[in-house]
Image (tube, rainbow, N blue to C red):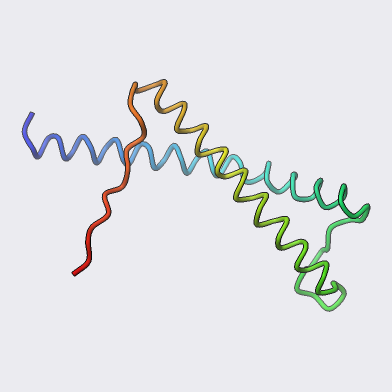
Length: 105
């Protein structure tokens, strides 16, 4: 296989992996949203704020909502990407491709 063909094959694998990982994250988004609402209700016995930036929401509520949302979304997306990586490895026998970082300057 020529260097050009190897580069093209690697680019295809990277593109396929990127689509799979993005799809897994997109499917996980509604799960994260439901989890955030459930965690809020469990922790506060209240409905989540409709508008965390609005004047009817206290700073404490806004900060708590933001923290719970950020952590929950990050954990769910991480779980989705790790699950996608396991599926990729089972399907291909290889670890997912990594992006090559180019050195600057």
